Image (tube, rainbow, N blue to C red; front, top):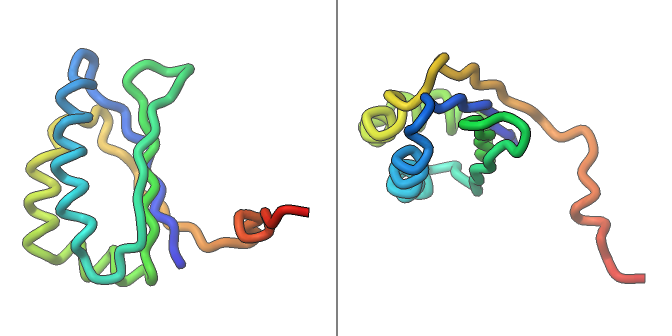
Length: 105
């Protein structure tokens, strides 16, 4: 599994509109082949900053399957006008994940 990570700095004053648009965009990405899950979290220390985490089965599911799809154009038109500066998107592969080791004693 691949984790897509983007730190999103939203233009001041647009956070409520961004969150509403992200909810709409969430329905788009959730239908894509290779999509596993996603989340959006708001930063406590920095106003208007969010982190977006999207899990894909493969890197190509994101970089080719989604980014080259008509659905990406919809995603882009909903969200890309909110960012300043435009975010850097990086992909990560798990080295250690203890979420599966949380069994009760």
